[in-house]
Amino acid sequence: MQTYSIADLEKLSGIKSHTIRIWEKRYNIVSPERTDTNIRAYNDDQLKKILNISFLINNGLKISKIASLSLDELSTKVISLTSSTDSFEAQINDFVICSLQFDEPLFDKTYNSLRKTHSLSYIYENIFIPTLRRIGALWSSGELFPAQEHFLSNLIKQKFYHAIEEAESTIKRGKKAYLFLPPWEDHDFALLYSHMVLKENGFDVVNVGKTISFESILQCVDKIKPDILFTTFIVGQKVTLLQKFCDDLFNHSKTKLFFAGNPELLRLVNTHGKVFYSLDEFDRFFNNSSLN
Image 1 (cartoon, rainbow, N blue to C red):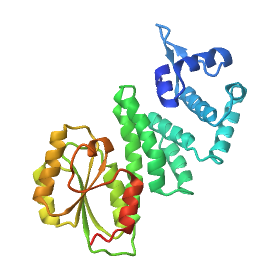
Image 2: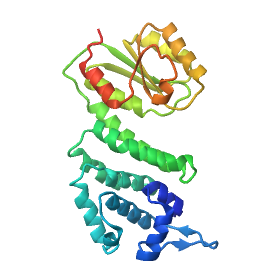
Image 3: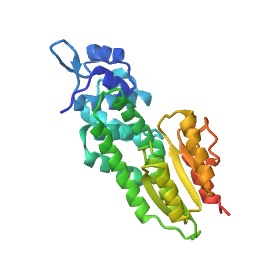
Image 4: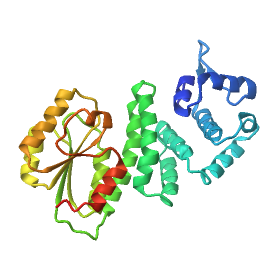
């Protein structure tokens, strides 16, 4: 069983460490273990309880009322509010716990429940992305190890692979889309998402994922002869490097260029192509565009 610091709980739940300490003393919300140097150490069950309490607090319940609930009553209240609110905090919490505890059954249970009423696109934008950001904040600060984030990422990717395989369209555009990452990028969620949407809209999609070099990108363009190129800027790079990449892509290819990713990076350069700043913008464009 993993242990967490009070700082971990604050980052995951949004509840200040000072507040958690007060709740421990006043309401006995949780009783953490103590290290030899008197540092608090929380277990998986205590993390889950704090996450549930955070959800209830955010939905208007008072801590004095929450403190009187048993664990079963706490869970029942969370489930009840989850079904009657537009907030997905409870599901995000479940996915965070799934990642930290390597709990695939919890992932499947939470995801399958969401899919009864929401599309994968909706779940990705409103639930998976906020979850990955929260996990990423812990990873970047060194407070969880990379395999925990990779575990969740791979489970999400499996859902996209399945959706891509099942995607069908009544439209046959007779156009090819070439999807790739710049040589410095590793984050391919945007490619998987665009692959799914483009296939649903009648494109023949060639998704090569991570590329080795700029030369390999041009080799693919020559071989595939695509009608559109799509790539993403996620990882921070020097503006001069990003601009050179865009310029070289424009100068060596007559294909229509499309970009997505980090809006702050994309606004720094002239991409010579169409930039999407949101998933909804991407969806609407390709749902309506003939690309003639």
